[in-house]
Image (tube, rainbow, N blue to C red):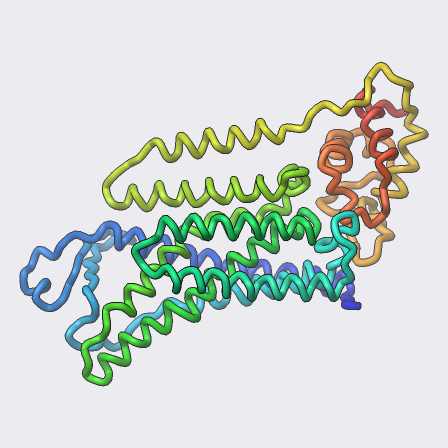
Length: 401
């Protein structure tokens, strides 16, 4: 069994997460910039530039100065030196993300990745399935791109959406709600990094080596790289959503959590489309309006319903509730946690005193009763009867002596 002490795990979590965010900002920032730049390009004003192969140009102002940027149809007459590349941002983002997956979800698989109530997997089975799904995501996505080629982007987008939806549903049948969201995000992130490593950078090398050999570069290489770059641009916001999803159990803890994930990812890509269109000089306000309506629709649809327990039913004394909280929750949420691998109370939430339990009643209701994401992976085996008792106590006012 994989094991790591909580202090070491915490430092690795901090450092890898820090690196992941830094690299991700750099990668996403360059993606956003270059797609915006492409969409802002205008035909060159100087006929000599057009004769030398310039396809478009743009004037920009930033940082106290003016910039004149040109893009060639295929390649410039002579290869410039130095030539700046953009690749390590993507590689570092994926490597640090995979490191986080190992540190947080593989070393703590029984806590965060596995839910015995969903699938009775061993630690190694869950890890093997997770890694296999990462590889499968790239193989399926790349295969779809190669079969459909360029020019059938709407068909490709529909098939990709179907694949992501199937992956979200399948992950929900294998892993915990929290783990399934991260798994889908890691799969999409792998597709994006694969685009850079297997398609975009090799396409760039084809162009460079052709110039080095004195040959006219094949424009098809650049078109392949551009297609995958645009795909990555649309996938960024959906991936960022999965990165922060562990903070929002009302999404992944819902009985239709996989569908909620797919809907929110689609909305994220739709919002990205708004900015891409806006960079071409058009503004389609229908996009943000429909995105806002979509989010509102999801929020209303998954709003927790009042628990069937009646406020007027048999009174639940705090003495009945406190042992449940102590046995099922306070093993982690305590000043001195007793759960293996937990050194401090998650998010600083503690249930050591009656007042602390009362003050956190709404949180208990949301996470232990409505979504059932707590206890994580149900490690402490909270029963439905105990959840019902907590719901009745909260509905009756969460009274303590």
